[in-house]
Structure formats: structure tokens, C-alpha cells
Image (cartoon, rainbow, N blue to C red):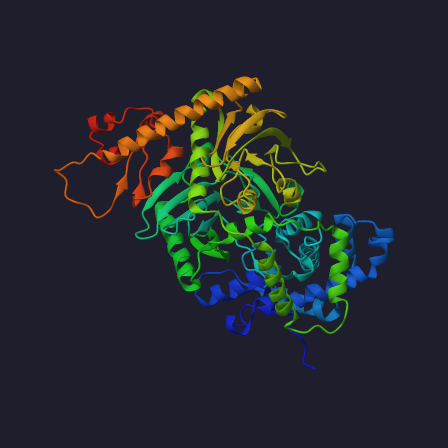
Amino acid sequence: MPRKNNIFFFEDFSAKELNENKVGRKGLSLFNLKEMDVPVPEFFVVGSHVFTEFCTVALENRKLKLLDKGRNPENEEVLKALLDEDFSKEVQEDILSAYTRLSGFSDAWVSVRSSVVFPANDNISFSGIFSTELNVRKYEDLKSAIKKVYGSLFTDDVVAYANKLDIDLAEVKLAVVVQKMVQAEISGVVFTVDPITQDDTKLGIEAVYGLGDVISTGEVTPDSYLLGKRDLSILEKHIAPQEWMKVRTMNVAHSRRGNEEKIKISAGWSHKQKLNDKDIQEISKIALIIENKSRMPQNIEWVISGGRAWVLQNKSLLSDVMQYRVKVAEMEMPRKSLRDLVVAFLDKYKTQEMLANQAVNDAQRMVMKQNTGLGGKIESLMNAAKVKKEEIHNAQQLSKEDLLVSGIGASFGVVIGKISVVDQPNGKLYTKNDILLIKKYSTEMESMIIPCGGVIMDFGGITSDTAILCREFKIPAIVGATNASVLLKDGDTVQIDGNTGSVYKDVAKEEVHPVVETYGDGIDFMKTQEEEVKVEEVALKVAKDTTLPPSATRVFSMTNLEPNKLIDHVGNAHGLVYVDLDEIMLEDGRHLLAYVEDRKFLDYA
């Protein structure tokens, strides 16, 4: 019987020889990048079958202790069970051989990342869900890091994530990518569509000094640049001051983890633009090559070292991801625990013989089951537009005096709730009435974030794990809200607007006696009827400018009508334009005609 390939070294295999079931999504994407001639640091992948065989043995050997008397095991207990078990002799030899080959003459610094196998649904990203171990060195530490990545599947947070999206975690497997680290001078992320609006004519870049994991954790607010794809013109820049950066170090005595430390950035550099315009366009070109050859929008991690750009990994972005996830989240499913996961995993993998195509067949049945459970019809465009207009109208009722904090809108939506300051993971149960003010994110907070009403962070960007998680579950979020933890206190009632990145004081509603309220509703109803009659009369008298050439496009314009009512009057128009001059002047702090006075005609337009 031929020996299994436990390790897939980047020089030994082509992407055509591999698939997701063998090396996972991330591993397969790296092999694809290599064939695109994109600069990628050397790597190898530990196959997904190593995960199932190793975890089955480790959990089966300690099943009685972990599941004693029907109890739910703790995350740490499952992780300890994995750390105490050792790989088979064959796997150990293969990992050592690959690491030695990757290292050369001295032990290499490597990153150890999960590469998920879940063919049932490509739309579910698992972004930021599983552990990533950076700056790992030496063979024994590498083995421990691989086990820690495996252990990150068996946690309460992952179970909560799976419950929300109706994922059967027994169907999920993990391959592991071991990749040579480069000393990052500047790190960042590229989205080949606008990550917030999903505009595919633009791409967004975020950048920080030093190691890039501070972007995903939200510890630092990165620079952000928005470019037009057609000519790579830079449309927007947001330069964020950075007081410190994280670097790899060999000075164990002064490093918390023994392999990385935070160093202060000088005042002269902290406020500078991280990437010069030439590097911005160079990274954009690489990103567009990857997008073009992948034929899908991409999320790409990159670093600059020694003046050269390297791509660390890429993920495909699907346009229907958010819509699908919202549908799944609304389905009522029985909640599962970590105990259920361990039992299901053992039931699935404890037999020695596993058919190679079993995962694919089971996944197809699971997709059919999910599609059957969705049911119902998608809301009509008109209703959705009305709701959106009403949200905008309500938001406009808040004045500048009510603004408490502003930051970067990372996930759409408006919500009112009480502030709960979170310093670290805790066992509290949060609801949609709670707005979490997170000082520092960790993956253990996922189960806290998913049920909450909104999220605010002092630091972070729109590609951080928190921002991605909030967009995934339609939770309004604001990141990079400087001094939010100073200005906002635990228990404060606020309104957060994820569309604009603003936090407002909650305006208390006046209590009105039911009789007065009913009388008022009657008056308002009669007024509304009168207004609608007037509107119809105005709509029949369309003013025409005879000096203009005829147009084939009908545009509806009625600036004296409230925006939430405009949608009812555009049935015979090709489009709608609503301009709020007061709002424009408030935002810019100057009268519109001042642009004409200064001869800034482009800004005026």
C-alpha cells in the first residue's frame, strides 16, 4: 500500500494535483498563487487527513474524562488532550523533513495557519475563527503550534459561530499551512472590491508598520487608501497615526512571547503615510493580477520587506455571502455545545476506513437541507428602500450637539442600546440591547459579539476580524473611534450609526398619554392625506427648461419632499436624485457658493 502524502511541499506539487479536501482553502490558494508567479514566501501544508486521524486518537483516548457524566468539557481541557498526544512516528518524520527543508542551515521563523476544509458551502468564510500562530521557531514548537491550530476548532466560540450559521462542525476539517516569515517593514490587506459598499470598480488597501496581525486583531487603526480600478487613481486616503509597531525579535528576555515585541515609533514617522503612492499602485497591480486569474474578488494579505512586496495569502470574496448568511441566521436551529461537537467528531472519524469522497457527498446533502429550510420570498426592493429611507430620516433628526464619538463605519446599520465595556472575554450573556465597547479584541470574544446589538472599538480598520464578523452577522459596528473608551462609560445609552461611523447621545422619547397620542395620530393622518393630494397636484405640473436638449433618461427630482416618501413617487422615472443642501453645508463647514468664489469648480460639482 503506497504511503500517504502527509505533507505537501510547495516545490513538489502543482495546484492541478491538489484539491480543497487535501490541503484546504488557504493551502490550495497558495499553490495557485505560486503558479501565477506571484511572489509568495516558501511554505508547506500538513494534509487535512492528519488532523482527523490525530484528533480522533487524542479525543478517543481521553473521551471518558472529557465527557464524564454528560458534562460539557472546557476549551482548555480539549486543548490539553491534543497537546498531550503526539503525532504518529511517520507524521513526525514528515513534518521534521519539511521544516528542515524550509529552514536550510538554521531553524526558520514560520507562521502556522489553519486551512479550512468545508466544501459544503464556499460562502461561509470562517474568517478569524481559528487560531493563527506567528513567529514559531524550532521543530518542537512547530508541532505544538499545529496542535493549537487543531484545538481552536474545539472551542465554545466556534460552536456559537456554527450554531448561528447552522454548520455541522463534524463536517469541518483543518489542513495547516506552515509558511516562512519575512521581517515585515510594512504589512497590510487589499480588498479588490470596496469592503463596505461592495463596489467592484474600486479596491481598498489598509497598511500598518511592522507585523500585520494588529490589523486583524484591531489593536492599531491602519492607513486606508481607496483606488479606482480602471486607472489605479487614488480616490481617498486616510492617514492614521501609529505610535507603536509589532516586530519579530530574538531577544527572549524583553519579549512577552519570546519572539515578538512592541517598539515605539518616533514622532517623525508615526504620522507619516505608511505606503508611498508608488508602492500603493504596485500592490494594487499584484492584487488585480490575482483577481483576474482567480476570476473572483479577493481579500489579500501582503507585506513589504527589503523594498519587495510579498503576498502571504488570499481569499475569494463572494457577492452573495452577506445575504446568504443573514438568511441562515434567521433559521431556528437547536443549539449545540462543545460536548456535542466532540461526540459528533468521534462518531464520524473513529472508524479506520474513510472514503475519499464521503465529505463531498455529505456536504451536498447538507446544502440541499439548508436550501430547503430557507423558504420564503426575498423582500421587495420597494419595501427595502422605504426602510432605508426611514433610517436615514431618523438619523437626520440628531444634531451635531448629540454627537459623542466618530470613527470609521465598518458595518451598516443603526441601533440604540446600552454601552458594555469589555476588557477581556467574560461569561456574560449579551443581547441586542447591548453595545459592546471593546478595548482589545481576541477570538474568545466571538460568542459575545454574535448576539449583541452593536460594536465600538477605539482602534482597528474595516478589514479587522471584528469588522468582518459584524458584517457577516449584520451587526452595526464602528472601528477607529479614537478615545471612545474614555468618552463613553459603562451603562451609557447611545445610538450608533454604522453607516457614518458616528455615536450619538440617545434622545429620550417624551411619554405621551394614550388619549393624546391617538388624537395626534388622527390629526397627522388627515394632514398626510392633504399633503398627498398636494403632492399629486405638484407632480402633474412638471417644469421644463426648453433651452436644454431632450433626454432619453427620466429623472425624478422633488427636493421639497421628505426622503422617506420619495420612493413612492418614482414609478415612472429611471432614477432618483435627492440633495440635502443643509447637510452638505454642515459637513463641509462652508456655503456651497464659497467653492465658486474660490474657483474650485470640481469640488462644487
